[in-house]
Length: 356
Picture (cartoon, rainbow, N blue to C red):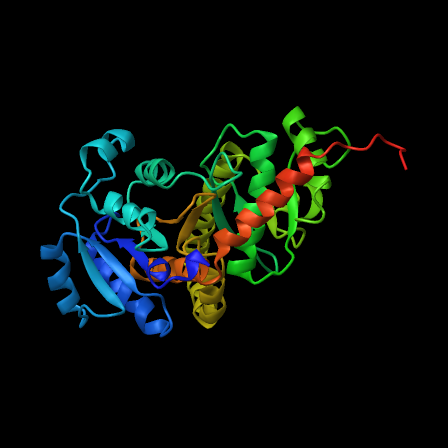
């Protein structure tokens, strides 16, 4: 298989992107290499004059597991995506994407400008066969574990075809990241009764019900199902998904700050908080939005993993390990096969109701 070559198992890391700078990226790469001996080799893409001293500071040196690929420019968070991609052709982000395009790496990890990464990935890598629009997949905690939310913001004006493909993309990412072999897929809507929701939801629901051989479709779900143990993949358009993910992240911050205020309200509560520190730390880790490091842009001919712009070294480590899992599982090959099966099933004529 093409994806199994040594070059396409390499992880290209945009070392210059993000709010905290290359020092955190290099430190995150060190953590990932230390935690996972079998980790795919890493290529740090960026200014060699900046990166090599940081490698030395972290006790790292170039070798089979870690190398530096020079890029002289940086796309900043303030840059306009398309203009930056045209103007800064030697930027660390563009060069990292091109390493995947030219099959010198299997995945890009970047905590840089989101719009530039999504546009650059789509323009330079193109969508895989049978898919017309990529989607962002985010892992979110729920009762009893986690679920995959897709699309988290890449495509706000989806068609039923896009949503069907999102279900396939999310199912495969769920298998890789959460280890659920046959994940339950739910379609986000405002009610589970027949006919509830928009015409887009009705059409998508009908299509998904025809794909039982490809995905494990559980049916439409409502908002109060999302954080219960109801489904493992929540499918929606990028408009709804982006609102959901940002609302959840905001709620986590609100819950955390309110809890701190209440626990410090008097000495008795403060003592109770100290005694319960282990439980609070476990809860904080469980609902931490950065636990999985970010979100992949799925559906392209190469892998793109978008880490949070404010990623610290722990988050970057998580993003690199998630990227490693994606290419180790040869996820794109399996996605292409299932998309082809789904498209063929949906293209076949539907037998009239009641026909034998």
